[in-house]
Image (cartoon, rainbow, N blue to C red; front, side, top):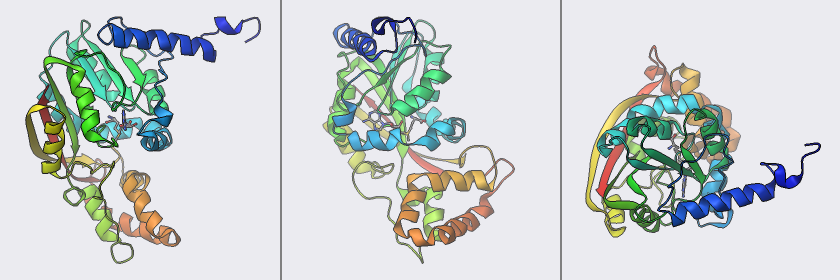
Length: 324
Ligand SMILES: C[S@@+](CC[C@H](N)C(=O)[O-])C[C@H]1O[C@@H](n2cnc3c(N)ncnc32)[C@H](O)[C@@H]1O
């Protein structure tokens, strides 16, 4: 900017680094976040080494997840009923401090902020700068703090939060036990965590139907180990992970709800959601030369599920709760 010295420019890299460093120090030295951060005007991108962290591959994936950023409303509409199952399980009250793990574009962070009121505080943490930018823009009226950091490795102040929450943001850790241990130690004594994650792919119509529609042409599996949306489909594994991370009173409730694929819309909205997801991408990647044929088969398979609101199918999730 003409006439503006570099150090006066709030967007200058050095100033950003200084501001981020100050806030990070405050965050880890004073029990997490004793001072409220400004809303969307805050550069907020704390430099926590996400790029060379153990979850760098996931950070790359979510930084390129343009479909999530561009259609934040559609994703929110689809996932809101599922996410609220875990919000209800949190037992939120006025003035609580809440951590939203893998907050993405921030719809849940805003919902949690409304539930804890003006005396409460909500911090959203995510590895995707792309999605956090949308979150900050959509939360301009609130003073939620959005931190670009890996929930597995970020140094939260011990006992900084009363509650930890996630809507489908915890299945992508390279080391889930380390990540959940980190989240648990960020909770105060008596603190609790609740999150919602997918059950196995075969129990989820939005995966089962497309996979069946193409199975004579490509053989794809969505339950392979490692960080992926279905990493916690196996309830025994999830229980073991949470217990190994030191959580107590681990409870998993199986719930299946109807959802609109990609939110309110029509057959193309639902098809667009599936094809942009990892599921659609994996199917097409298995036989790229058949992309049009595979897409047409999935479209035909989704057609019977079109309702006045959009493509409505069953979504099966675990609502996980645990005590710190
Ligand atoms: C399926 S999206 C869900 C986003 C959001 N919770 C929602 O429901 O709209 C998964 C989110 O988890 C984030 N994520 C993945 N690994 C993470 C990690 N290690 N630490 C923090 N966030 C992570 C991704 O960047 C992405 O925003």
